[in-house]
Length: 179
Image (cartoon, rainbow, N blue to C red; front, top):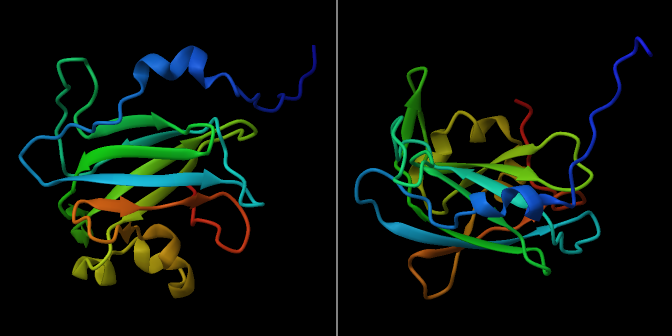
């Protein structure tokens, strides 16, 4: 037996075997915040769609330690991409939150799982025209020219719909955080 640890093993592209029953496009939260739809795509380094990615969505400040009737944490959702790399989900627009005495702009925490990744990717989705974005301590860690990769775009003429693509590599690569 080798005394050197072996590398992590990938799971995919078999997400449908183990995760389909856990997919939920509707993120439930306490309170009655405005619900918004987020639509987007997961794209690889050649701008090709990733058809077998799974996104976990966490909406900070929208829940407590409670669970829904189905047993899911309040403020949590999970969606898969389709053959074109597209995803969509509905979430209450999160309020700003406070952590370590610092105010954070309304945002969603997003984890990306897919074939070929030994570890999931962690990013955030911020909302456009949000005054608190200018002071968000995590967003301020990102170079100004790259912040646009974390901010959704309002859909024209649709007040409760946003567009946000996740680029895994390349010139438009989405900012991912090490946690």
